[in-house]
Image 1 (cartoon, protein in one colour):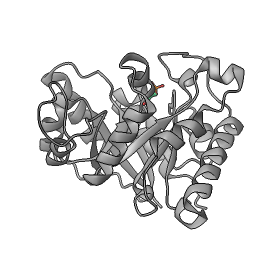
Image 2 (cartoon, rainbow, N blue to C red; image 1 turned 60 degrees about the vertical axis):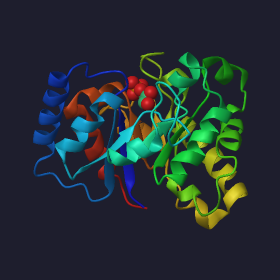
Image 3 (cartoon, rainbow, N blue to C red; image 1 turned 120 degrees about the vertical axis):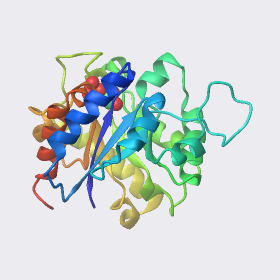
Length: 258
Ligand code: 13P
């Protein structure tokens, strides 16, 4: 199973010029490099999807940061999964904590989107994770999020979902100095695996990628993403610096094979 390093560019790259400079630099850094065990995915703001599609870099797959659950119609301001498909998006981030916080997205909203993405052949990167208060209180939010967001996802479809454990308290914009330990990430991974095994069985669970997100950087990708046994990373801030993103990919691609 390949690892995945997905970049969440969030609400950045504010102009076409900025986007083009970013892609030019990233393209130059990727030239001549081969990553045999890792897929790179760039999740761009919607307005850049066309530019990313035109970029045509074969080493990088495309993704979006959200979508609506209906295919078409009177849904002002929303973006259809069919549109994403037509702009070469193979992935979509769903249930990100920033959308849960600022747009009040619920697990039920996320569930509709997960089902719709899978129906349209787009792989959801489903974000789950506790915030600082839930961590302090020991609230088991991750299992509840998985249960609700994956409701109705069949045994035949679950391997197309990437689960991202993203402790909200470790996201760089929330708490720049706070990182989980390797053991904490490993425990979250086990918890997610246990849930998947109970719902889908051990054989199918082996095919589901579980990745880590939250302040991933070149100097910590080894301990929090590799040593913890994760299948990759969702990278926010550091993915805005192409050299950091490529370094993270190199670290994850070079991880010891199990
Ligand atoms: P940072 O890598 O900036 O902490 O962001 C994590 C994140 O939200 C990725 O989706």
